[in-house]
Length: 156
Image: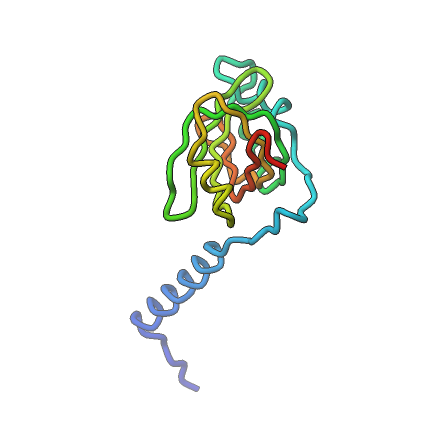
């Protein structure tokens, strides 16, 4: 019985197809309903000493902590705004200052209502915000929070 050999072109096509499937699966984001999601992550104060500049934690300890907290839902208050920028039509990136009592954060917020969008657009350096969000990663020793629901100081 004669075996048929697969052509090089067929092998390449199968390989490329497999890569496309893997890439598509990796690219799918898990949507989280933050309004009802349970908080299961650490406080901003708990992370501050681990990720502070000139802190005592080692690269290995920071890497392990990042693996542990990725994907966790957090609820943090009293974050001090450093900078705000637009991300698309209705989204914002809010950078908060790190301090001994809180890790700094890069927050991506896409509020559904106009009042919150206007409030975020009017934030000034030093204003405070609260956030309920998913920790996406750590970047430059700051927590990247995305998606996020931002509550402005004085808002319900």
